[in-house]
Length: 261
Image 1 (tube, rainbow, N blue to C red):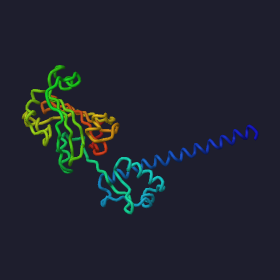
Image 2 (cartoon, one colour):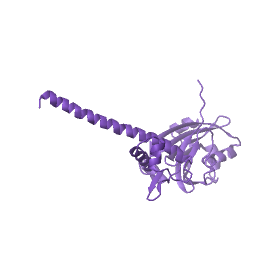
Image 3 (spheres, rainbow, N blue to C red):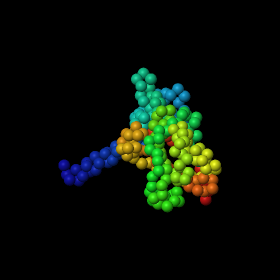
Image 4 (cartoon, helix red, strand yellow):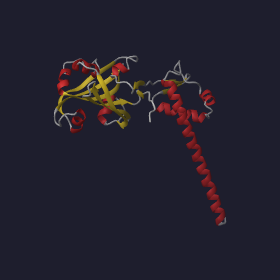
């Protein structure tokens, strides 16, 4: 075969390979898009009987191929949200609970419509404040603070691991409080005699370390939602610095945002 023909033939094979990859990439993109739409529906009760429509129906409704539908359902299955049952179809098996970001509320206050929040106090006591903690709480480095580590459950299922730092002049009164059944926010308002004012928050995804994964009963390295929150009293004093690791497969964050330039 002349060299020019070999080059042309090789180029043709290369073009076929690129086209095949593009088709696979396009299907993967469509599957992610469909998974996002279905995820919203199943998390907001869009499938009343807990069963998703047949793959053929989904393909027709969303103008997608059966392969794309199957790939989208595989994504949701990997997230632990759906499962395929023989003779039944694809059913909803997972649930995520909504956590608002536009109101300053404790976890029990936030999720009261979804069940009972209980707290396992794993560690509690005075400890010297690390420099970043002291800086955020506006106290001198090394000053003792009350350190609390709690595993928080909703209806018995592990939901979050909370690490909390509170100035000791306020935190001492928490030592005899019912932390197992009461939000720290409510206790702080009772102790100080004033309401909470505002909080600064940072939300990011991090990989669960071995300790966090074990406590939360999640796979090691699984993605968790890390919420860092510094809460102030109504008079502006910072009183509660928290590092909260939520199981990402059991919580969703939402809020109402207004545009201002």
